[in-house]
Length: 147
Image 1: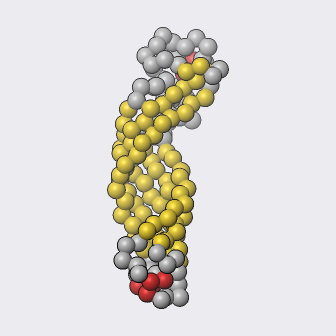
Image 2 (image 1 turned 60 degrees about the vertical axis):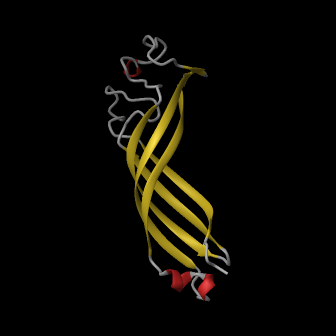
Image 3 (image 1 turned 90 degrees about the vertical axis):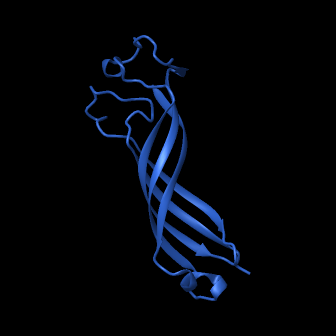
């Protein structure tokens, strides 16, 4: 049995930078071009899980799946699209170059739901907490106002 999920996420984050813009940006001629930051946020996610047995997707609201073990019978598989709120926390680092900043960020997101991946069995003691996600991002930020 395998599971995959399509996840669309939108939210707001509050970022705190340890150095002021004037202290790290190359635009201001500073020596320090690195600026670490932390972030906390509130997220809303729309998800569409898919659970497969032997490469075949299970239908939503179907009869019990006889080929599955007992803990995955009785309303333990959710393949209908749904949504969930969650919170996130991140640690990141920005590096300033002339007109852009490069960033590297590690983010942890905790969902207020346990069926994001399509599975939620009350008979499984290892599956008693809500789902979570770890994300590593690498990106480019264009900073308006740098000449």
